[in-house]
Amino acid sequence: QVQLVQSGAEVKKPGASVKVSCKVSGYTLTELSMHWVRQAPGKGLEWMGGFDPEDGETIYAQKFQGRVTMTEDTSTDTAYMELSSLRSEDTAVYYCATDIRSGLRGYWGQGTLVTVSS
Amino acid sequence: AIRMTQSPSSFSASTGDRVTITCRASQGISSYLAWYQQKPGKAPKLLIYAASTLQSGVPSRFSGSGSGTDFTLTISCLQSEDFATYYCQQYYSYPPVTFGGGTKVEIK
Image 1 (tube, chains in turn yellow, green):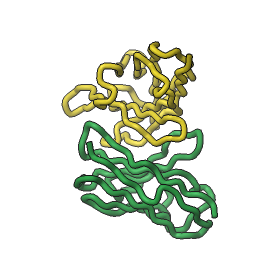
Image 2: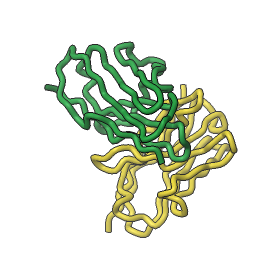
Image 3: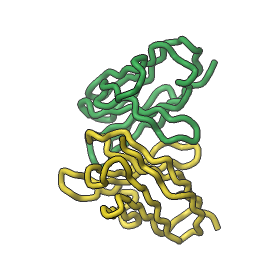
């Protein structure tokens, strides 16, 4: 059974950066392909990017290119998503989730609320 | 990017009803289609992947069908715990993975 536990809520000012963590248990991070999805208040789901095991690279949605960095620390089985140059439109719940294409599909973290406000 | 369009965006139904939600892709995606259920304040829950394969632990009243551009999620006998928002997701063309806008199922 895979468990994904995310870091707590954050409040940031416009222009700042935020780094959200996603701790894996039950499996090792190397056995998973981790993706990140966000959801603005009252809105739908938006895919931000994730690891593509077919070419061994992390792929980002074009919308976030240059502003987002997804990294992994395999020594602690923790994935990270860092978003920079925050603006009010980045206020959302950010989720880590396992790749829908993998055998370990369908596991999501509990979500991390990031609020961007001056 | 492939655009996913769900219909309706919301509707009301009663416990025991048979309900169907539709998802249409802007281009063919074979069977690379998943359905999620989301309740307020909770993460999405995977119900179906590969258009019609039930995720482990999901009740059999949920079913999915379709291929190419047109897909449906059916709940055969709506239960109280099924009132939620449902999303479709295509993973044929990656990147990006794209989601439908959601369908909210409310109590009549």
